[in-house]
Image 1: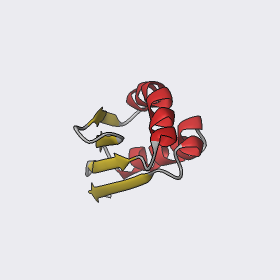
Image 2 (image 1 turned 90 degrees about the vertical axis):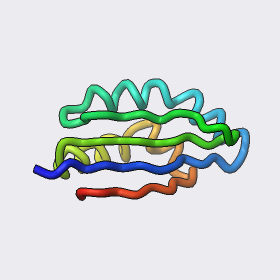
Image 3 (image 1 turned 180 degrees about the vertical axis):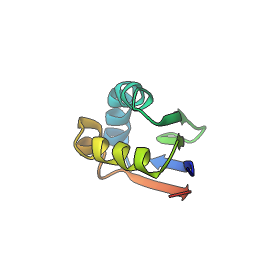
Image 4 (image 1 turned 60 degrees about the horizontal axis):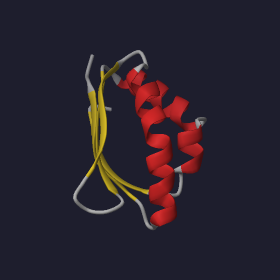
Length: 92
């Protein structure tokens, strides 16, 4: 089994996107951390307004794919689809 590690930044383009992230992020974090196979998950604000540091670890590729499926159909996934993400993924 190979862990999947994702790291990068979530970058809001305006105040409206920032407000969406601030409103939906706590529930997104809660649901993700509860997923089978989620070893670590953090999304923390940076010193740049509207930018969050993202660090995720899943126990294997299957757990990561399950996470992606859940997120795609979630309120978080729908409401933040247009927000820029700059991620690197290792182990997938």
